[in-house]
Length: 278
Length: 278
Image (cartoon, rainbow over all chains, first blue to last red; front, side, top):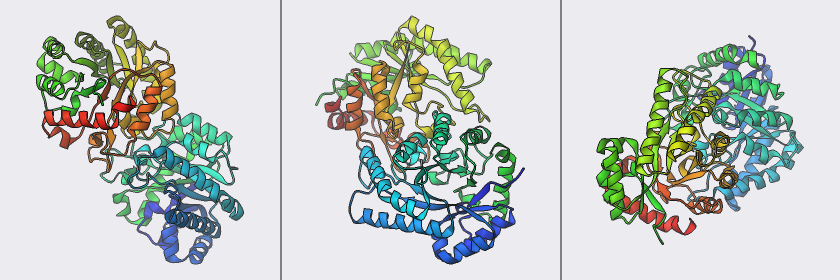
């Protein structure tokens, strides 16, 4: 099986700096990489863009913008400026997509309906800049267990509703198996996402039990957990998705392992479980 | 504000035996109780029914049946027999409703679609017995973080789809705030549940952060967590719900506290936050 459409998200080898991440990706025969803003900033934006380009890697996405749910005021203006900068960085890096994490309930608030409505407004503010720099804003639905502290966007259907007022070039969605695999409406919403040309990124990552004491770190390498990757990947293929398939894992034992070894392990999992279904 | 429609679910004072639970409920001025099969069996079914009746309490529900997802075979037949017994017990206790937890993925399985389809079959098997004994099977959607190990029914919409082939007297749904508060489709699905006359039980319980190391125990007393009870309760009222509002909390520090004190605390929370909205 081929790695032709596989991409290693940099968060999977979080402890590696950018040049090491690039080398580990190339070394494992992976043709694309998903970048994060923090390690890119650390190595320098222009230097990072050059390092990735010189290594012959595609950039599948940049993580991440968002955090849209704070009420109007200084913090919100700062977030808005930062999101514009993130779009500019994505353009410099050649990333087609900026992944957005919506943000949770503001401190002390219980107004989930209100927080969700602020996401709509923030997208409206950012979309013109996204169009201008040629980068798609990709709304990522996060698992409902993160709704209060991370992301008030909880289902693929909700993400598609949020994207609806914009063109697919301006606003798309991320399908991340870890976050959406449980959804009884998943098949139908992936098909809808295809019809509406909204799938900007497909990310693969397994659901591990028991849930980690830090629930952010409950993710695992495909095949190690509960998710049926063949079925979901076939749904994504049937929806017409033809871009890179990113593997993004947050897990302490994987972060503790050698980056080169991890790159090989995830590439192997992709070849065994996913490649034939993409 | 009045406790007239409040019910204390016995799991909230898990360490109390049945007579103590009854006394704590009466003592707090709460007119109804939600029972669990295990403490009822321990005290004896007939004795429990008499104790509750003699105390002048309504029984709002019996917990629980379900565990429908094992493949056909001996375990599944045993589950089916046990569910029929649970319906009989509910009838003896005067409980209008048997709460159902669907069950998770069978050991080693990744076939979520298949597990879900077995829930449909199991309901079809049980519905005639439910009708016969005059007890409504109430499908409870559990939070998506429990999909692999507890319940493959994850949203109110999915529960309503499962109930659709049956009459509302045979099969209804539970709306438990802890499990469904995050759902972007909640308002719309509660309204639908009302139109379809499916709300068999409304349960109130807060979402506490951080998620407990045993995620089952992340529940809290209304007001202690992130949920907007006024809004959700108004939606449930607008849907025409007029039965008891149960408070069911799994939380170690609450189980460790005195049952009489806990009954008073939850009654107080109900009066402050929920009573005026029911």
